[in-house]
Length: 72
Image 1 (cartoon, rainbow, N blue to C red):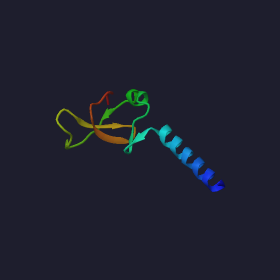
Image 2 (tube, rainbow, N blue to C red):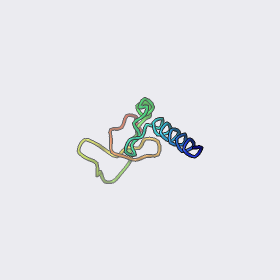
Image 3 (cartoon, rainbow, N blue to C red):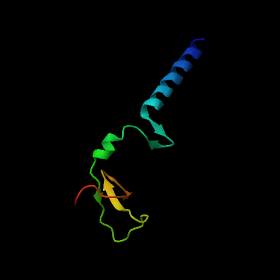
Image 4 (cartoon, rainbow, N blue to C red):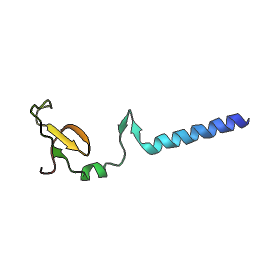
């Protein structure tokens, strides 16, 4: 009986942690306001492998395809 209660408590804790993290299929879907405020700079690259209309950009320490929002 005690083991069942411990297992149930562990399951509730794990479920609460997963819900709080707001991660769906390994993609963060939480608070987007911080992402919108972060400057996105053009990444200097010799070649552009991004889809039409997008360029290599860097936001924080991640390089991706997008549209720059800050000069430089």
